Length: 637
Image (cartoon, rainbow, N blue to C red; front, top):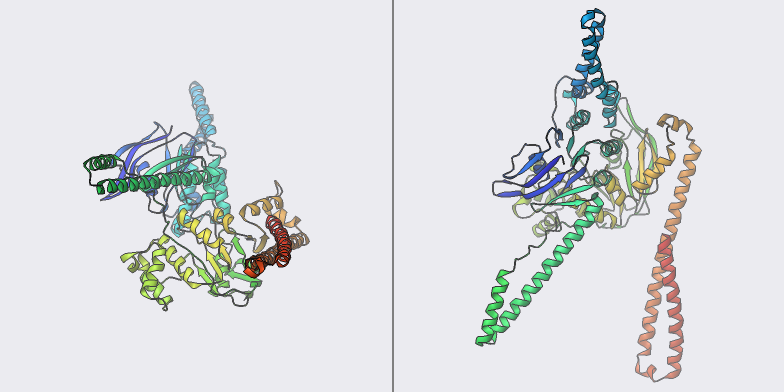
């Protein structure tokens, strides 16, 4: 065991954050801490690393074990370049290397009588250097820096010149290079692109030590962890398995607790009704029995109703009008900034009802492409054409659609002046803003709160084409699931950028990958994209050689096959809808026959009844065939 927490509690003033939490972590175990925003996950981490002192209970690390902690926001400044800064974590090995070199330089000058002892010291130091991976430490540092998304041209960039996200990535590099016995990470994927997240997954999965992660990235957690520590309603619960296993167990547990609560409430109500009835008899014996029941009822340990986090948050996305089938056509689109080419001569189309994810490494131009489509910046070349009756709703990860000087209430009322005060308050309540909270200034809100205000504006827009830039950033897992459900039931078209692979997997019907200035189309979700990408990437080949071997004709053929498959699916869906209409029509005819047979003048007319019975029997058989056809079509789709 590397870490043990026994009965730890923490409060800030009168607000209790964590109460009587107990769990442990074994050596080499990979675990996650999950919970809604504000549940106390970061507070729990800070107690583990000693930044906060628990008010009761103990946190114990195994003797002689080390840990490294990456907070959500890390600051590191100075004139050192990225490579130099990360290399500082190998100071012990560098000192050994320098001492070995110095000893090698002195070797020829050592007197004969001291040579044996000198060589013994040299070999000991050499063995320690070799055991510490001394001959490969520089390539190890380079591999970690590149793995976390930096290119070799970035290695000399000074720390003082980096953005906050880049500094956090450098701190993550330093932590991985230092190789502690326990790695503790708070939202490590926030500043990583999909390729870097996949690299980090693989690194942590094979790490010869323990890992404890706070993250909203469910795909990331599914790949790595074998234990989940849930923080909810000040309590801590432990589940074995990855995130998906936890989600099912947690849901089953909450449903079981809810059932127990309602059963107890039903029993309490029953007892209270019996007591009231006994007292109404106004007999001494009955009153004594009522009092006896009252005493028994007082002794019952009342169960608290299990909290359904964010259950009040409601998100219904409903287009005001239906767009045409052709929603967006992008032709020959190009964009550069200074000398940096983002993308060139990009072509793609979006059809009504599609949910398309745009993915790619950081800096490839995904957000820029969304802004061009939304008319916020101009392209260098090419055209963007929206179809008939297309109304765009835009969700911006930087929240430029919000006005920092306004209150939440003003943000909604100024954008939608047709709404009255009650309607505005009802909308904001659906996004968990109640009472005086609606008068908070936008500039004072957290990232998660700004995200909820943006979602509220999006819901009110009644748009039929949603353009979303990192919509799950700053949302907790429950809110992400609410957004997923809303998008999956949305009848309009969605085009979004996200690095949340679980979210992409749950919502996308197609993926466009922006790679090497051009787009590659994948007709499916994220798992399908990975599968197809693996097929197109033979083992051992680098990207350059693959691109040389990939023929334009092959790409066109693959695109043609995917278009053919999409057309086949649309044809089946149209056939399914046609069959549904036929079923409704046939059912209506059969109802009319039943109504006709119930009429008094028909009920006594055997000839007419016989005619209607034959017609009904025939119609019922036809309806049964339609039911079967519908079922087969649904299976095919």
